[in-house]
Amino acid sequence: MARILVVDDVKFICQMMAEVLRRRGHQVVTAEEGDQAAKIARRERPDLIFLDIAIPGPDGLEVARRLKSDDETRHIPIMIVTSHNDRSDLEAAYAVGVDDYLIKPFETDALLEKTEKLLGGFRTNFSIDIVEGVPIVTVLRAEIEGELVDQLAQALLAASRGPSRLVLVDLSRMPDAHPSLVDAVATFAKAFAEEGGVLGLVIPDECELMRRLVLQVARHARVHGSREAALQAAGRNTHHRPSSVLRDPYLGVLVETVDRTTTFRIRRVDFSPGVFEFLTEEIGKASTDVLVELEGVTTVTSQDVWKLASLAEQARRGDRSFRIVNPEDSITQLLRAGGLESLVIRRTDALRGD
Image 1 (cartoon, one colour):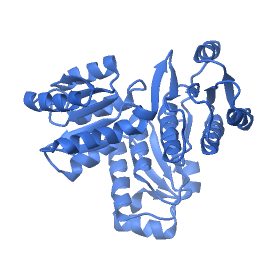
Image 2 (cartoon, one colour; image 1 turned 180 degrees about the horizontal axis):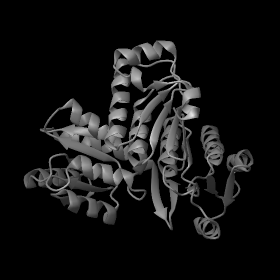
Image 3 (cartoon, rainbow, N blue to C red; image 1 turned 60 degrees about the horizontal axis):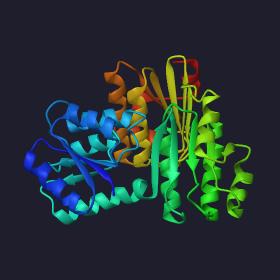
C-alpha cells in the first residue's frame, strides 16, 4: 500500500490519523514541525502528505511551497489539514500547489475518502520518480483508458515542469494500449518537443497498438527497449532545457523570458484554477518583470480579476513590474472596475518596453 506522511503538532491527532491509515494497510510516518516534515518528505518520498497549517517552525503553507518548488518532491500530493474554514487560507494553499484540504474536526470516513481520492489519482495508477535527474512516469496498470488517460496527462505535465528536457514514460507493464492512450502520448510528445523537450518511451515488444504509437510519435520521441537503455542514452546527452522558454501544453500557457522580462501568453478562452496556480508558481520563481498577455482569453470573471490583482501584488513585493497586455475591450472594462486599469498596456507598448 501507500507511504503516507502525517504532520501535526498535536500528538494525539497524529496518532489517531496514523492508526486509521495503518488499519487500511498504509505505511505511516509522522512529524510535528515544519523543518522535520520537509526533511522526512525529501528522504522518504511519501505517496501522500497530510500537512497541518499551524505547525511550529515554517508553517504548513511554507512547507508545501518548498516541496512543490522542488523538482524531486513537487509530484507528491499534499492535503492541507486545518481547523479554520478560512477562504484566504485555502486560496493561499491552492496558490502554492496544494492538492486538497481537510477541515478539523473530521470523521474517519472523510479522512479515508480524501486519502483514496488522491492515491487513486497518480499513485495507484502511475508513479513518478527522479532517476539521475530524469523524471520517469511509470504506468502501473495493464489497461489505461477513459479518465485514466486524463490522469496520465496530469502525470506527464507534473514530470515536465522540472528542468530536465527529457521525460521517460515506462509502458513495459502494458501488454497493449488503448487508442486514446496512443493519442494522448503522441499529443504530449509533439507539444513537449516544441518547447525543446524529448519524450522517451520504454515499450514492450510485439504490441500492435504500441507500434502504432511509435509510428505516431517517432518524429518527437525516442523509443527504448528498457529503462536502463533509456537512462544510458540520457547520460550520453545533455538533458536540461534552456530556462528561457517553457510551454505548458495542457494549460495553454507559453512562457518566454527575454532580458529582464518574462511574458506569459495565455492561449485559452478563459482562465482555470490550474492556470492561476501555474502563474503563481512561475511568477514566484521569476526575478524578472512580468507581462501577462491575454492572447486567447475572451472571458474573465470578477474572481479572475481578484486573482490577477493578487499576482500583481506578488510581483510588486518582489520589486518587479506587472502588466496585462492586449485584453479585449469588455475585459478591459472589468479590469477597470477592479482597479487594474493602470496595469493594462498595448502589445506595441510592450514591445517597445514602455
